[in-house]
Image 1 (tube, rainbow, N blue to C red):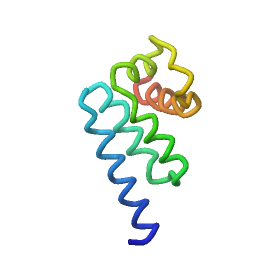
Image 2: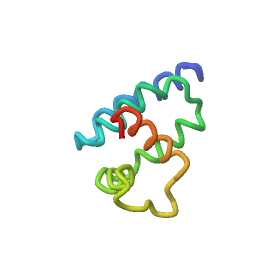
Image 3: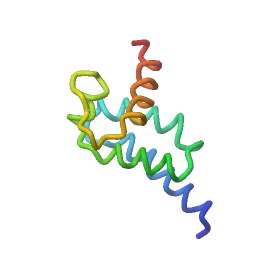
Length: 92
């Protein structure tokens, strides 16, 4: 497998994972985000997305909705990209 195939498989897995979170709310936030962005992302951005997706759904949803501040370990810059994308899609 070449590195191009590796990243293609990684992108496909991330898109699947984004749409199959376990909570419908996060599916509808992360799924469209992944569909719109993962094909353009390189390894570094995919790493950032994977790390954010490693978070549990309930706190991640509260962060996206602005109900709670994320802890210090969270990549806030990348979280802001997700929030902006969600707000654009929902007209908020």
